[in-house]
Image 1: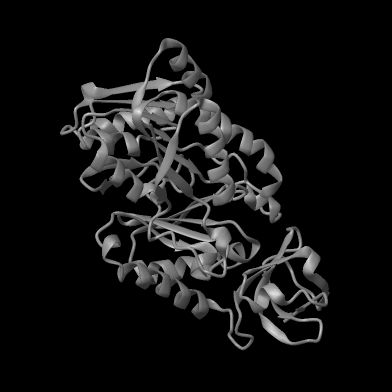
Image 2: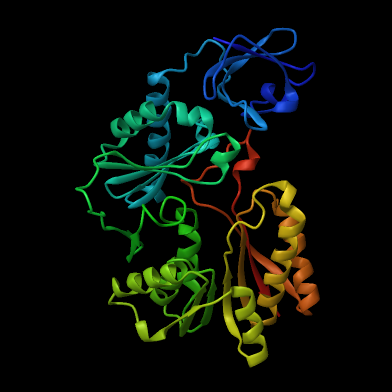
Length: 399
């Protein structure tokens, strides 16, 4: 096994069990290692620190599999880690019976670059690091053993694979349907049916991390006029209708997403379809048009796509978040609620709160945070990896 030897003083993050080693921390590689190979990590004085996946193309030069220098990284290792991740979720009462569930949350489950979501009897896996890519077969076998699922589909098509020198990879890994057949996956989320497109949908087909926030919206939706921006396939919108909203206007720039959203509504004949309005538009422009037309709402959901994939994009993203929240504040009625989110890793919670505060100030609205919003229990955040808390949100009420 090759050895990755760190620069003097660069072992501190590893000693704190942070799973990433950046290129600037690495002194030299002794031996040969291909992308994804497991290497032994040593301090400059040759103290063993653990074993990691080597990625020569990435600024994150290695990702730790284990901080136990004697633990083997083999097929049994992945079966064990996957079984532990699944068992942790089975032990949480609020996750039992969920038909849509994140099984593996990458670094926070000790499996850097590995994400796995389960929708009924189908698991969707996303491998975003060289190490995860290297151990694809072991990961698949571990998922099969831990879940007994019928099918596994790979959606390793995110942009971050390019940073690892990896090409996009998609397709069935187990239980492929007949040629030309596309499995119709429908999950039930708190009594609302939602179709999941694992082949063509965003990420792994759905945004499971907002499950609890959608349920909370349902609990306060009664008799409110609600605006859902960047609605995707209408998870928030349908829960609002289920909660008795007076009206729900859903906006997205994607025609196919809106078509799926309306198909999702059709799956739920118990919901009042006449209270739903759909608009295909650029959200920023639509909000400006609402302002000019004098429209207003009791509750607005702002759940935009990732504006800042890394800290290098933070300034540009901050301007976009400021703009969208400013527009939102101007459209709220007195006493109205704004559910606003950032899923950008490059924007921390403290900065996001400052951006939202600045937007309220510029909009001339007095407002207060009444609840902090985050991901669900199946999206844990490891204490040694705060970067895993990518979804942050605020529930803000205006005077």
